[in-house]
Length: 289
Image 1 (spheres, rainbow, N blue to C red):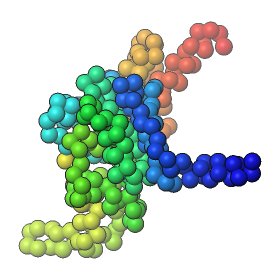
Image 2: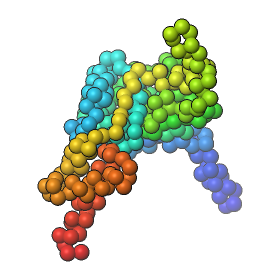
Image 3: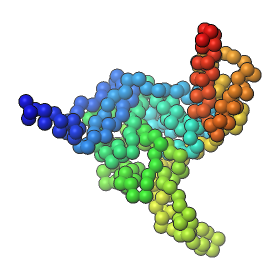
Image 4: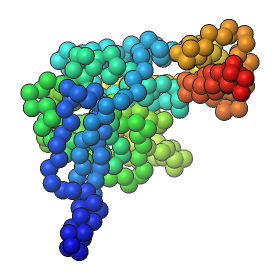
């Protein structure tokens, strides 16, 4: 009995190293990679947050580019990995998930990985091959809020996946990553001292080149920027409409602007949070609570 308990405790601690079943992607539109001390496993996600592409306002250029790239990918044509970078709450993650909402019927599937999972990329690719032996689906590896420290081991693992690994990557797998940092790594004032002038050309030093080299491996760079006031208010109106609130803009406009001012940001996330607060408060008032 005691030996049985010890074995179970070790299996729980190490994360069962025996082969795991893989999700049935005919049933699951998405999966997440669960990183474990001895490898990891794919877990299907039945309920997925799927914003509609038409609901994303103020990001038209990025939306058009990523949608075209995803359409190419699903159709079996060449497509690029994409880095979506920019301000917080500006729709980067929502845009990636909106691709799944639109192209799920055509065989697109989303696999969410975190920073720890990047170290498991060979295992993830092997698991996807096992889950889809007939190459029925197209997989987007989705890494949200990606960034690296100076000595992060996942940095080199990702560079290898994007460009330069010995093992060729399947044409059925792309990487879409989001980050607040354009080059995924922190920039320091000391980096500027390494820049040199060669005639009229500015040449980056080794540290700067190393930091830029990873982001350059993404075929697409899509920038996201803070919204102007009218775009922010339009997003508020859309979220209120989705929550069943048809109140004229004049009645909530000032409250929405105060909400954004208190948070120091006019973003899609802030607009959604305002809409939920306003809709909930209005519902309570209507019930006399």
